[in-house]
Amino acid sequence: MMDLTVRKLSVFFSVRHLLAMILSLAAAAAMSSGSGSSLNSSSPLDPFDSSTSWSLAEDLSNSSSEPVVRTLTPDLQPATTAVAVQEVSPWDIALCVTGTLISCENALVIAVLFYTPTLRAPMFILIGSLAVADLLAGLGLILNFVFTYLVDSSVEFVTLLSVGLLISAFSASVLNILAITVDRYLSLYNALTYHTERTVTFTYVMVVFIWVSCLTLGLLPALGWNCLRDESTCSICRPVTKNNAVALAVTFLLVFALMMQLYLQICKIAFRHAQQIAVQHQFVAISTTKGVSTLSAILCAFGACWLPFAMYSIVADSSYPVIYTYATVLPATCCSVINPIIYAFRNPDIQKSLWMACCGCVPSNLSLRPRTSSDV
Image (cartoon, rainbow, N blue to C red; front, side):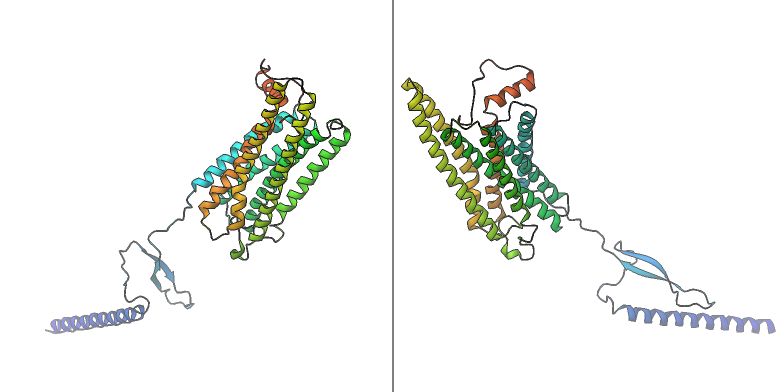
C-alpha cells in the first residue's frame, strides 16, 4: 500500500513538472514571435526556403561560467544574384575593325619608308608623318574599344587618355594632308628650288609644328577642358565640351577650304606648265585631265569622309541619339583607311619597294620614271 502511494506521488510530480516546462516553452515562443513580427510580419521565415540561410551565433556577452547560449539567426540573402553584362554595340565592333585595318595599312607604309634609304625626300617625310598619325588613330580606336568593354571606363584617366589620343591622331592626320597639299603646291610654284636644303628644313619644321599643335590639342581635355563635371556641356564625343567640338569642326572647315584653294592653284599652274613645255596637244590634254581627275578624287574622298562629322559636331550635342554620332564618326575614320592608298601605294617608288620586299622583283609594267610631289 505504501509503495502504491509513493508511485502515485512520483507520477503526479513528474506530470506537474512536465506541464510547467511546456508552459514555459510556450511563453518563450510567444515572446519570440511577438518580437520578430515587427521585423517582417507579412512574410514569415520559412526554414525550408532556399533564399534563407541560417547561421550559428554565439552570445559572447555572458562571460560567467554558465553555459554559452547558442541561437540560430536567419541570414537573409537573395536567391539569385543578377550579373550586369554590357552588350557590345555593332558600331563599336565596326570601329575596332576599322582601327585594325588602319593600323595594318599604315604600319606597312612606315616599314617601307623606314627600310628604304632612298625614300628621304620631303614628300616621303610628309607621307611618313601622315602614316604615323593614321597608325596612332587606328590604335586609338582599338584602345577605345578595350577601355569601353574590358576596362572600367568610369575611371577619368582612362576616358581622358582615350579621347586625347584620338584627338591628337586625327588632328595630325588632317594637318598632314594639308601639309602634303602645301608641299605639292610649292613643288610646282618653286620648281627650280624645290629640292634644295631649304625645302627639307621647311618640311621638318612643318612636321614638328603639326605634332606639337596636335599633342597640345590632345592634352586639353586632361588639363580641365572637359565635361566630366557638367554633363550638360558635353558634345557628341564625351568628354569633349560642346564649345571645343565646335572650335575643332570650324578649324577643319577652314583647313578644307584652304586645301580646295591650293588644289585650284595647282590645277592652274599645271595647265600653264603643260602648255609651255608640251609639244603635242594630245599629251597636254591627257596629262592635265588625269591630274585634275586625281585632285578631284582626293578632295571628294577627304570631304565625303570628314564633312558629315564636322557639320554634325557643330549642330548637335550629347542629347542627340548616339546612332547619329556613330553614323558620322565611322566615315571619318575611313579616311585613314583611304590615305595610304591615295598618298603612298600610288607612288611608284613605294610600289617598287613593296614589290622588292614581297617577291624580290619589280613588274615590267611599273613606271620607274623620276617622280616628284607635283605628280598628283
